[in-house]
Image 1 (cartoon, rainbow, N blue to C red):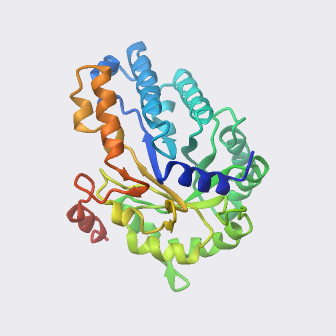
Image 2 (spheres, rainbow, N blue to C red):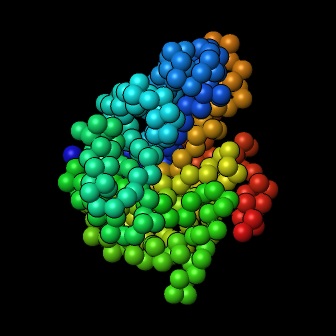
Length: 317
């Protein structure tokens, strides 16, 4: 398998977008056209609805976005059958040419991280992926097993750094040696990222940098020149496209150097919730995806540029 940074660069250019579709099958939000998912978390009806909804989202993603990002928790809560759905989703997306970012946020000491890495990293893993989100807050040494596995399989890692939630500043803004903790972490990651640059110049080691913190994203980009950024917080969490692209690079084909994730705004728009048929739902999802990209450039238009919500979040710390 080719280098993850090179694959990400290629898909950014081929699809002319950094847009990533988050697939988080909230039981309470799945439209009724997929069945009555609210019969119970692990009921047969809920399982069928989650499976059908997740695959329908994937069908809409193919050819229209650069990647999908399934949130493992929504499949884990279904037990073994839910994890089988996640496994099938990963294989189907990879076969369709999409990057798969498994959002499992794994992290632990040595042998445990080795086991996590074997389960979640690479196309041949039980839960196949192109990249995995990982948690570094037990210490940089806990990343070593993930890095080894990613290097061996041509895969990527996105390390939690400056997350999009309002409470991120409770810990990530604490000062360490004269700089915020997230910048201290970036400094530790920088040489690891540079050592993993691909032919495109982009590393296989990246960070999660929330769209709700655009100034911080720009500063992190200065520290992590080679690293791909996974950028959550776009859309429903309040960040508009202008802020979401703060950590990316402008290429001749559009935005490069990472992925901008949108979940609720892409798979749970109000127009889709009101759909009376699968065809109406497909049309609504296709429309909302189209509203997020225009000729390879992010849409700075009407439905996602909510500067007032973003300002509230930025000032909350």
